[in-house]
Length: 90
Image (tube, rainbow, N blue to C red):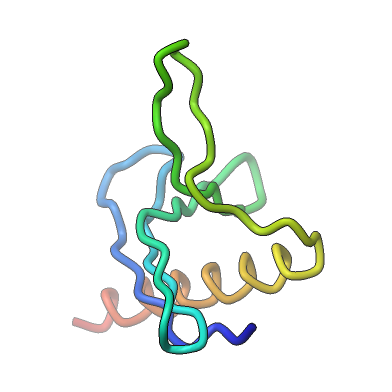
């Protein structure tokens, strides 16, 4: 499965939440609201969730393979860093 597009929307003054991302796979499937989060000195992504009747958050969509999760995370973080650079030059 190829990641064919990553769009990032930075969140100004969001604290640990730095951005939301939308990722398109193979040009035919999209996942919205992937969160870019900064924790201490590292960045990571959190997949979109929904609140259940039991007041628990459950992932709506998520990778089941660690290698693919790492690839997805790197693509999203790279897109976030590029968006921040573009914002700084405007």
